[in-house]
Image (cartoon, rainbow, N blue to C red):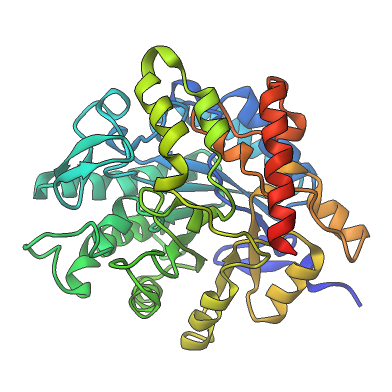
Length: 420
């Protein structure tokens, strides 16, 4: 019998050739906040490698939403280059998605052009920077920017948008009691904390729907199953968020977890890539942060042991609460056996990040080998490098140094011992 992995699936107004999605793992391949040849080559190779849909990650809906120098910023002048990218992805038989979001407090004035915005004022150690609590005018501007970004995505030929409502970015900052200390209609109860998300999603759904009432583009959202630390959102509250997004009209939800600024390795699992991050940070402009990461990185961000399908237990609670809704699984899909388990558990689609970074042909190889497993060892060098340059696996990185190679081998041995 043919594996369900390689059967088509209809997501809103589009049909994917199979059940696989390249997750919205940030590539760092957009110098000048615009698509590059490297971004084009990477996503085209993933499409050629058999993926059902590849997700470009992640695009800020406005300038204040930028968290990295090499991150997309949705604006009319980049649409022609994005259209070339989506055309190339379509030519390989895959669908093209783009993740839209706003980083909120996880930025810096030199990147986003203003004091970083957040649900509440405060200080973000991640940047580090002071944060400005958003006023009503700023909220309205960002809400409108979500709708504009969706319209640009349609113009650029994307088949799907994924709205980032997790990981401690702006929508997530409004949702979580850890970052939302407001006393107006956007704070306090969970219903109030969901207000900003509702306003953004109403704008998104409106922009995605034609005058005839038909959806012009699939709309999904990425949410947390839990924030991953005491004082954050837990599973029951996150299920309430999922129910609200279902009411608002999303076609599917991706179930992830964690706060990048508070519990980054809960999102990705494994060891915080201290040496890689510190190595690629420039001495001239970030010497203080480079030293801080090298000596304090593992204290601020302790290791969270990687295991296959690490979000599955929590994701199944969402399936039980909303059995008829299509959830997209993400988190530790590294083998065909694992992918089959996810589909058997009732998830119609699944996403992969590091597996298709290490090998863009991962899906094609699963198709010919029923027990194929990724060669990724979850060293997280790719994550360390992406913050300053671009995401790349250490196995095919041209500028890796002997010291970094030794560090990678050491982490690989440590991971192997923990897995035993």
